[in-house]
Image 1 (tube, rainbow, N blue to C red):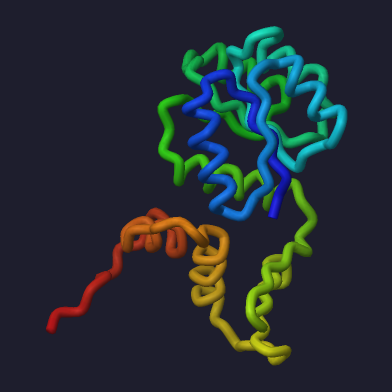
Image 2 (image 1 turned 120 degrees about the horizontal axis):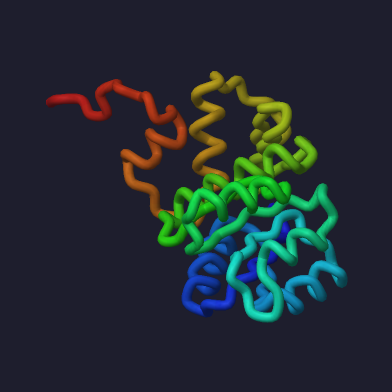
Length: 188
């Protein structure tokens, strides 16, 4: 999946994000202050940076100003004023999430940014099953499966959220969208 750097000074929040991203299949590195984040990015450029604004050493805004403009950044911060959000987005951040946040929403926003910024040749393989996200093709033991667009969307949600327990409502929300109004259960 992706190589993600979390720059967050609060250890419990950093650990929650790390565990969730790791369960979703991502490789995660962590920095607890601005200078450490810049050093880690200089050593190995991540696919995405989750950046707190209020970091010790130098702020997340100052870190963002020193990064390559093409490096995707999501600010994850308690600073919820309109001026802070505008400043973060004005610096070129791909998203701005205010704490406290729902972890599933954070994961969905991470996936959305990665879809926009990474090449579309991402592939998932397991036990003879191959899912090509960019081409929306699925293979089982080398033979292509004919999936409807909705079946592929459901498969993609399940693959991208593997190792996470999703409720029926959350699964419907992610696979069918917010406006799904069908019946989810049949009466017996």
